[in-house]
Length: 252
Image 1 (cartoon, rainbow, N blue to C red):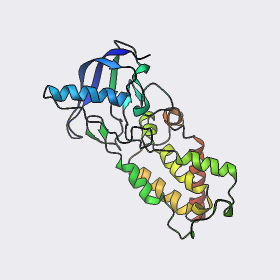
Image 2: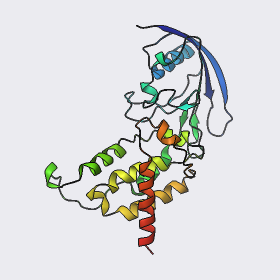
Image 3: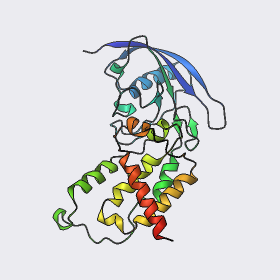
Image 4: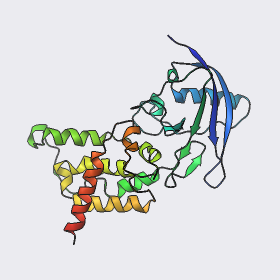
């Protein structure tokens, strides 16, 4: 049954990466428990615009848990208190009437703040551009049964490909590591025949780009997997390490 909430929001406001930011406090009332978290911010922004204030900048696109744009800390957790959901899939029924909710952008030097809750995640794009693709000629599209792939490999590749690049893994890691993201993008190709031709080159190039972007080392705490809205497995990091070390040894 639909209910309504009165909430206190502490939201990080920052004009750009070169200006110091701070928390601003807002009161919102009459918030439907059926709203998503982003819809709640829409309501706040409409009220801010009505009184001539600057609306809160935040990333969004599909609002279906697919695009990975809705990246923000909510009460100290990437994407909020519920597991396996993005911010746009988080509903206000997960909060209590009268609650204070703190909202922040991702905190990582490799993700500089653009404005308010929006960060620049183009570092992920450059990691993909370094090798997250198949460039060799693999021929025309095959019928499903013409290219036998073990089901376990196909399932693992599909699971790795579910990564939406939201950056929650980086935000959750105390070292701001991008190893879960990078390993997922390496795994989805390394597990398939089409990706094996360039496997060594891919692993070396993508890991090198990840390091160049300034992401930290893996903390081995597993916070990335715990906070990933798509449940990307830590096993991908182990696979990436194997791919990388194999490529390093074979090039010597």
